[in-house]
Image (tube, rainbow, N blue to C red; front, side):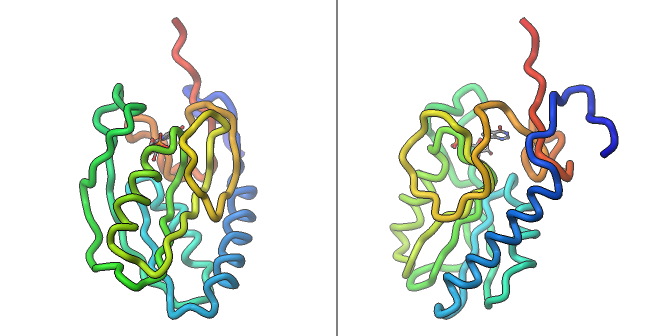
Length: 180
Ligand code: IMP
């Protein structure tokens, strides 16, 4: 692998490790939803776009991809749990089997908000597929398909960013902490 950018401390998950796990999750989803009449997949922008693209291309069952964009109120206020919809779905999800695809669960506020909001729209089922979850105290939110648990550090790459940088790195790496 070429040298890490100087702002990054170490690779937490290599591209190969991620790829192998994404294939496993796609296999599991393909089995679990095989008897359903298609799957409605909601990718949460921006962070889930790479995970979603890789995951859905491995699925062997009929599915539709849609997107939502959500945002916490301000970077300094991330942990207050205030989340808002910036871009909503194109279609109603009533009666459909819905899977939320999210990049990372940190405090759990975003996923918790998504459950509350989407449940109100009466899907036939609502599950979540998350690539990484930080090992920290967080809200109790069900994650039906989880890629990896990682330490409680800021990570970037494979869709994850720091101030919109590093999203397209093929691996997930820990960002160096600012000194002082
Ligand atoms: P929550 O705290 O679980 O609600 O996560 C809020 C959002 O913060 C996530 O959906 C990510 O967009 C972002 N986030 C949390 N931790 C990280 C990280 O380590 N790297 C990049 N984005 C993160």
